[in-house]
Image 1 (cartoon, one colour):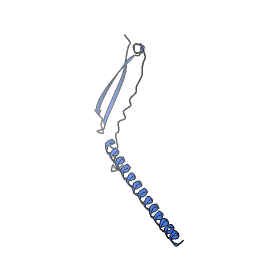
Image 2: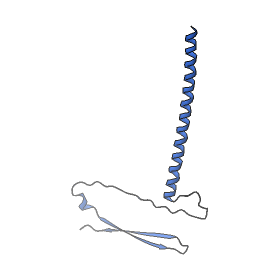
Image 3: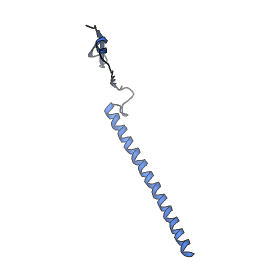
Image 4: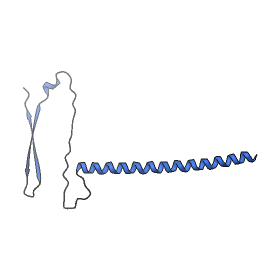
Length: 109
């Protein structure tokens, strides 16, 4: 009888150690993931030029790239007018780089 109670107590103590270890591992994993996500966020901010060190007087200029994919069947391509885009870059009086885009459609042959 005493052997059974002793084994039960030892089992409960070991189970307690196991649960504490699982909590520690979960805490370590959560902290590691938080660190990695914060680091990735900082790297993306650097890549995109969005730095927290900018003063209120400075502006951040960002470029957004939009890509569209169109699937066409058969001779549908012949009915779509073409488009030509030209860009002109210049600097205004305040020293800002300005991009002017002109879109012109080309007629169908």
